[in-house]
Length: 314
Ligand code: BDR
Ligand code: CA
Image (cartoon, rainbow, N blue to C red; front, side):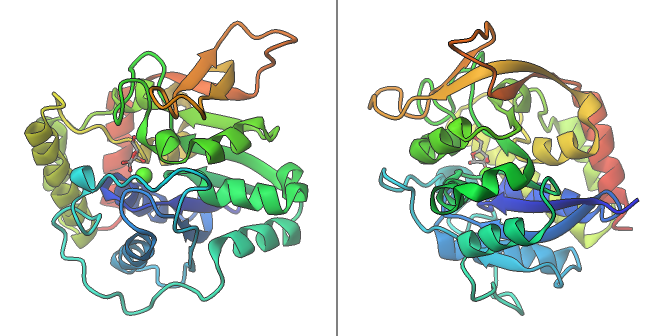
């Protein structure tokens, strides 16, 4: 059976880079049509460059990279380079890729691929702010029913926020985009901090990855070591969570996660709680289910799968 037609919309980003390497390790399961990038953790020129570097590291220069929106829909940009380093890739050597991104902007690509492909075929994985997808929906609402599913890393309920007291970074960085996506009537799966904090790269898990010998697993080891140092320096407490890889894990092994239908709403106005995700499990006619929210993850199974995927690089 051919793999799931997938577009990975990301802002690499240390954990986006790991997610990309995992997705590119499973071509029989995930038919990655393209990588689209967005400004987020670092600026848009850097996230596009980083995606090009990672596809080369994975030996997949054939996967097109489309650079997307370079600022959020409404609010001013908010970077997370304190978590990802100035280049966005921690302390990985980040040079100039052999091949840069395509000329066509990501939003144009998204609209045309969704119109060209049979309805219900293409899944979109989002591991950055939702600006590209929201802009595509805004310009071409006819694409919405053509999307099979959107699986996104974003939001927080039980865990509280990681960029403000109550907001998770991806949603906080473009709450108006997230609001458009949440209200669009999509099949939407959200993997927020409630689960990504459970999938933590402990020292023992990082050591197991360090035993793998490929350049790709070596890069993952370096990225995770950078994140571990950064989390310690910033005093966030505990080993680095693997946020974005959860999206790929869910696509490959959904049994790792427990999900609950919910009514999801995004705060777009309050300066105090901007980007907060209000997750209501008590759905009703007034508050119908519009998403599925991940509540728990089997972290041992998640890391077993991560190792197995990285082992494929040989
Ligand atoms: C999310 O924010 C970004 O900094 C990470 O790449 C991840 O997508 C976690 O809140
Ligand atoms: Ca990200």
